[in-house]
Image 1 (cartoon, rainbow, N blue to C red):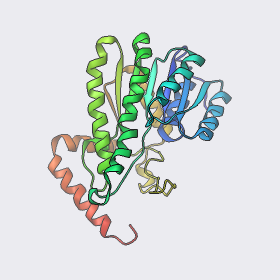
Image 2: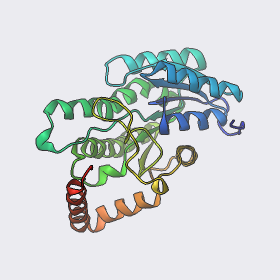
Image 3: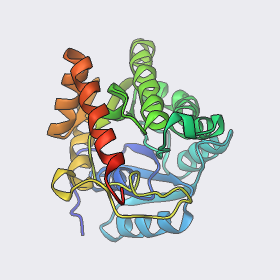
Image 4: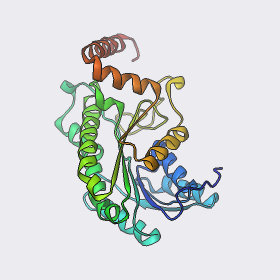
Length: 272
């Protein structure tokens, strides 16, 4: 059970993709620090469980069913949270998932489905919350990924959507700063999450990443909330995430050759 912390009393937050992983952990951390938190995601049953956990330690939480890929859903979620707790001062645009496969094997619709949530879902969330954020001079945290820094064979839809999110966050930083709104780009490496565990039909599978490489979601949430409070332009999570971003900036051709060889080796291994 979490302990109540000080720091965000009177603040109101909305977290999209709050039903699991990073989103759920960030929602718990914000509530533990005193914020009233709107939990937005598609899975109502999971939201109810997380809201009950938050209320158990004295926090305030409102579960709101929301699909960020649908026009109007983020607006309805914001209205519900505002009515319950007041105007938003913190927004965490976290909702996302991953489509994988070789470009030659994927349909255009697979890319469209990826972008509707990972990119346009962020745009819908920002537009739905902007009036509140400007009134409260608040902060929006946008979940990108280290995968948005370089192209991994077999991960073009996900990586390209996160590259677009990174550019979107950078543009928003300059656009919203004059109005007192902070923009924080969160670029995780491997963090405890369901995003890598979804099979082609939506079923959960074992995480393909070794456990020792994965940062616990609660640890990531503490760092994310700290970055929000400090209004850092970007937070890169995990040591390997920092390494990947550094290599992408300064030795991109070397990194791409390495990733290409790694992907070729994995594709040739039986059972992979």
